Image (cartoon, rainbow, N blue to C red; front, side):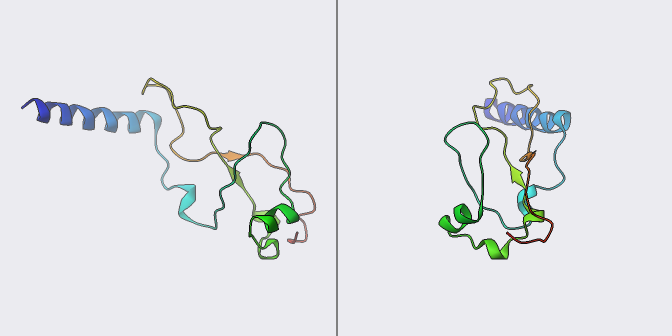
Length: 104
């Protein structure tokens, strides 16, 4: 009987958390081509033709007008479940220079 009570409590708490914070209708990861990159330090970073080639990505196949960068800043999750946090990746602001022709 204790196990059933704990299970029901967990489901109820999980469900109410999703309702309070709201949830994304679908993940941004559900469509498109995705590449995972990491950075070792904070600051402004340049992603150029040469960097993409070094990662095995063909820049000629990419329309720079459609590039987006997503991330939630890393770090640990909050200890309290009541803290509002994103349930999907957040789009980060970027500047793409020379994108008007759709080519790198």
